[in-house]
Each structure stands twice: as C-alpha cells, then as structure tokens.
Amino acid sequence: MAPRKVLTGARVVLPTGTVTDGRVIVDDTGRIAGHAAEGAPALDLSGHWIVPGFVDIHNHGGGGASFTSGTVDEVLTGVRTHREHGTTTVVASTVTGDMDFLAQRAGFLSELTEQGEIAGIHFEGPFISPCRKGAHSEELLRDPDPAEVRKLLDAARGAARMVTLAPEMTGGIDSVRLLAEHGVIAAIGHTDATYEQTVEAIDAGATVATHLFNAMPPLGHREPGPIVALLEDERVTVELINDGTHLHRAALELAFHHAGPDRVAFITDAMDAAGFGDGRYMLGPLEVEVKDSVARLVEGGSIAGSTLTLDRAFKRAVTIDKIPVIDVVRAVSENPARLLGAYDRVGSLEAGKDADLVVLDEAYDVKGVMRKGEWIVQPAAARP
Ligand SMILES: [Zn+2]
Image (cartoon, rainbow, N blue to C red; front, side, top):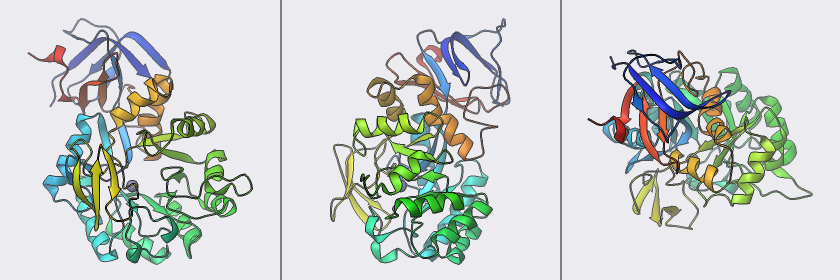
C-alpha cells in the first residue's frame, strides 16, 4: 500500500477548470481521495501544474524496446520509459506481421494487460492499404476479412482495444461492424478511401482516425477524401502526432480547432528509439534509421513512427501551438481515457480515480509522475 500523500500549492487542472493553489489528496490505496484542505503534512508544489496522467492509445515502444517483438522485460522497459515521461496508461501497438505471429503476440500482450502493465492492444495492420502502407511490410498486408479480424480478437482474449484498417478494401465495412459489435475501436487509417467510403465506414461504427493526415490521401477541394469526412463527423476522435515532424503546425491547429478539444487524442506512435536515441532499429520486420530523432525506413525513407513522448507533445501544444492547458489535458488524458472506456478510473483528477498524475513546472517540463499513488518520478521538493 502506498502511504497517503497530500500535494498542495500547484495549479490543479480539473475537468471543470484550473484551481490555483489547489490540492490533491491521495489515499493509501493509490486513489484520489479529494481536494479539500486538511491538516496532514503536505508536499508544496507551488509554481507547478498538476495534470492527469497521460493516456497513449497508439504506441509501439520506447527505451530501446519494441512492443511488437520484445520480451516481457523489454516491453516493461518501454512501458517504464513512457511512464517516466508522464504516460501512466499505454496501449501497446503492433505492426503488420504474419497472422500466426500476430495471434501469438496478442496472447503474450494480453497477459501484460491482465497484469495491468499495459491497457490493451492496438493492431495496426495487416488489414491496411498497400497504397498507404507507410512503415508496414507490403507482402504481409491482407484484406480485412472479418474472419481474420476475429482471429486476432480471439487471440487477444479481451485485450484488443483498437484495430486500424482500410475500410475501402474487401471486407472492410463488415470488419468495422464486427469490431463495433465486440466493443473494439475500429480506426480508419493507412487507407486510400474516398470521402464517401469513409462516411460509410463511420456509419458502420468506426470512431477513430489513425494519425489523421498521415498515411491517407491528402485533402483536395474536389476530392475531400478521408480527412474531411473524419474531421467533420462528431462521432470520430482524431489521433494527432504532435512532434513537429509528422504534421505542420498549421495542419495540427486546423485539425484541433475544427474537431474541437473533445475530439482530439494526442498519440506518440512511438517506436523503440523514443526516450532512447538515434541509431538503427527494427520496426517489425523493417529496418529503421533514426537521425536527429526522426525515424525513417532505411529502404524508401518513409517516416516510420516517431520518437515522441507525450510530455513533449503536451509542451509543444501549449508553447508552440498556443492551445490552452485545459484543452491539451483533454487531448492527452481525458479523451483517450474515454475512448478506452476507462474514464471511470483514469483521465482526470476526480475523487475516486487512480492517483495517476503529472507534475509540470512553469516551462511544462515533467518534474514528477505518480501512478496509482506511487511516485515513478519523484519531484525534487519531495526528495528526502
Ligand atoms: Zn503506429
């Protein structure tokens, strides 16, 4: 059991607004007990923000380790790396692989889900378009046959949270329906769909745009394509990779303002190099070169995931994109928690939820991370 903690003096961001000189009381079960003043010894966090722990629904690894191919220890290293950057809830994303391999991987990751280390599995591929394959092996791509999709869901034993697919391919719409029926998010991505095909997929139950703008046809005024269909529909949450490489600042701001703060989820789409460094890595079966923190396929030069951590996406959103802190909190915590159906436990600093929180300084750099009431990164003020 974690000892009881009282944090005071910080600007505390709640769903209803920011409380200056606010308090967060953490009980000994690791949950938030409330915000009321009381006499217990407190940790003074004046000059800081306290925001909810970040929730990343699209993440392939970090700390030199891959969620797609790593051992248990390696996956936990990746999870730990992202936790140190404020991500207290992470969904592990796979990349395209052989179906048997993916099914076996799903079983492996389902155990880590049961243990509470990860918050489930996101299958990115193999049901995606060869025209928009990005960093996925073309020869392993396949149509989204509902029977095949079903195989992966079964192998994941309830841990599948999201499947990215190209709805215009044979079986695409039926697969979207199947996913929706099973309570798994159908995400549209790595797609060559038209505007009309995208609308059909949303009507069938798709609710997420996988890294909007990336790996889909660009917006044209006579062929608006998936981007406009996904942005305009209130049922869809759009993933955005806010690393300054995947999206121009102006494109990010356009999407953020058009969808509104309740329909954006910042993701990292991170690969092994996140929180680690430049060098050569493998992304599934493909070789990737990371240079100046930008990951590209050795062959062809496609952008291959990011080296982003959500704390950097947060800081960039506030300082460069000038998005209000409370809206950034929605994009990194609240909205993705709701998508996962986990908002009753995480995603905000309300009483009764897990004490998952991030302490930021005035420059929006991480100074503390707490998960379930335990410090992952201890603020300097709290060190003995
Ligand atoms: Zn990805």
